[in-house]
Length: 227
Image 1 (cartoon, rainbow, N blue to C red):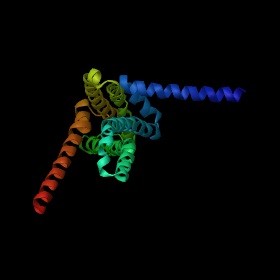
Image 2: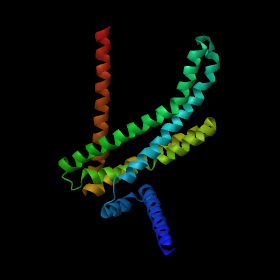
Image 3: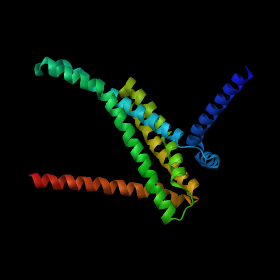
Image 4: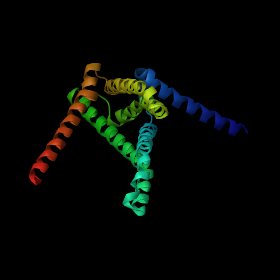
């Protein structure tokens, strides 16, 4: 009996600490990350947070697309019954496709962004942290996306009433995500906020823009070649 009570108490305490980390990452990231680095927490929890938050976003996007496209299926009867059934089946799989896609993209951005910030903070600004530590802290930068999820749910209820509110929440979430990333690099590598901002935002943004420009140039080059 006492052992059961003890186990329940430990589980309750662990859950409370988990909620403290989530709230702390959102409201007081500097102190929260300092405590987390001292505790040397694992990578599993931030990994699950990334999968959860962005999986929910992907699922909601899929539901919106399904609701947008499904009304046209009755007007597609001219393509044949078999093709119409195939189209309906595809529409049903859209939420699954968007959920998986969102999670994969989020995981790639999580890993790559932390890697770019690590290289910049460690080798350009001579910081002291490690990639694993930064990756762990970066996972908690997904917490502000809960605001985006809230906005998407409200838009799903009434797009005209809540669209502006959704945009506001998205801007706040994006801004606060950058703040959390900067604090994570600052705390992890013990560098000043300016250097942390360059490492966590400016350099990764430049890399991603250069990559997109390269992809665009390749498409134009290939298009010109085939034409």
